[in-house]
Image (cartoon, rainbow, N blue to C red; front, side):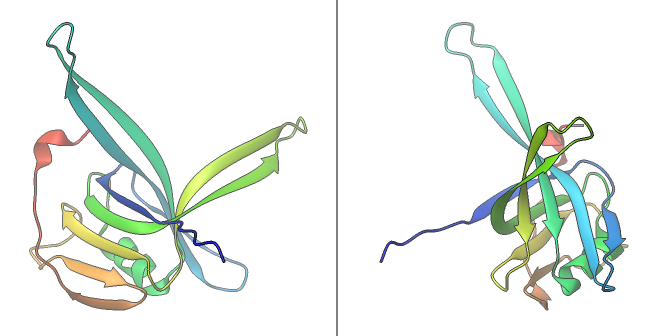
Length: 146
């Protein structure tokens, strides 16, 4: 039996206020973009370079969607752990389109609010698969890519 693993861990900043939608069966789903950045020094010029990667995030776990709806806004720094999924669809011209998303839908999925957001002075929280507990936090607002 072959072993496989589909796990993504990201620390980044929320790019836009999350979009909270309700499915036909009444379940809430949160979606937003998360920016992660790499910084390095160019060996030839010595110049500092930066590249930002944008990730599409979709959250299905009710407890996490509730925390996102309550506390997460543009600029919030998050740690996320989920899995990758690529979807395919056809646009109006019947051209195949693809999107790869980070999904938080299994009991192993996690979200930690590291800084920012609508905390109103409250302690940041960690959620995984529906349970919450205290977590230590860190903050470095100097590298927000927007």
